[in-house]
Length: 216
Image 1 (spheres, one colour):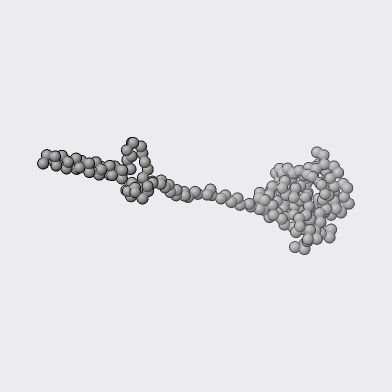
Image 2 (cartoon, rainbow, N blue to C red; image 1 turned 90 degrees about the vertical axis):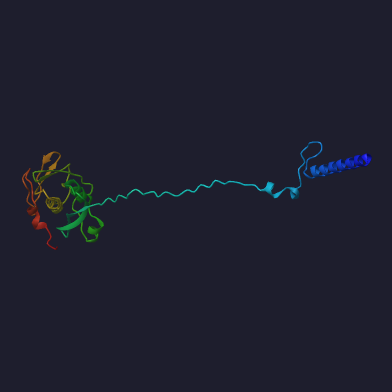
């Protein structure tokens, strides 16, 4: 009996060792302690699940207010200008940026005709390139220029040119008379009837009524 028990025990331990060897071999643990990768189909599903975290940033566009648009309103003054038609002086209106100063008015007159006046058959008796300055004091506008001023014009055009300046300026507020100065000397100018003023004598709107057209 004792011999049989020993044989049975030996067989039992031998079987157990074989089973352990099989189990360890199935778990992928080599006998020499090295790591051996298991085939993918033998890896448990729980070990193959990967979790990734993606940070998402949401940007909400901010409403930006556009700066307010500034609209500059340009104001104009309607100014009466006088030009020549058939040897008579006629009224013509033109818009000038407000406020229409005496200097602006005189410069515009000396520049000549605009397209509207030209199509109306008007002309200017004032010579091209004529320059002058103006100074208004106590209702008198002193128009200052240099020689030859109007001396190169025919007598009729001299009267019409002076009439253009006087009628245009005296239609502006604050101007009632016009005095002409050439090279710092007050000069004589022809009135509408052809007679000359004395030196230093100012002329008025009424002095040129006889060359003013009544067509309008």
